[in-house]
Image (cartoon, rainbow, N blue to C red; front, side):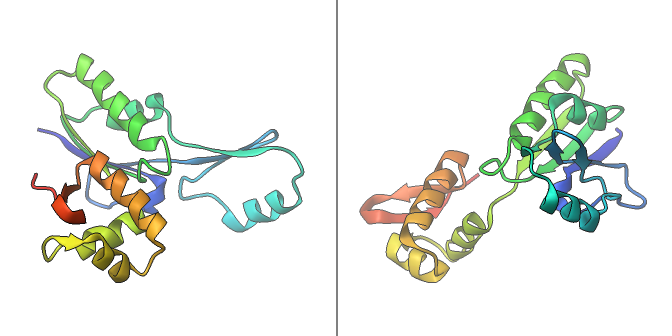
Length: 173
């Protein structure tokens, strides 16, 4: 079974010698140019150009076709993306996985949604067992509103479970 690791460029890992590997680039787009974060990007030159650019700029995650091209030829694929709370990269990778399986029914694709820094801090607080929300806020040293917002996202993603009396624990998977 041919195994492949695929990441988006938020990983800052563009090659993995000795491993079937692909990096799908995130993009910065202007009316005049598209910058691909593909390991060859001149970041200093891009920053210099963008400082003086007066037009519209945006960012773009890899699209489904980009992910499909990266999956090609593999039967078992491990995918890691920037957190779905910051980018559509995760959702595009999932859609590509579904489409790839339609033409490659034997394929096994595992798409992993990475955590934001705030989410990671919360998960670290819960590794020793259930904690009250006040303990989590104190331990993370983040504003309570950010912790509560991140906690909600972690619940939706299935990472944490709410318990009675405002306690939380890591979800059992």
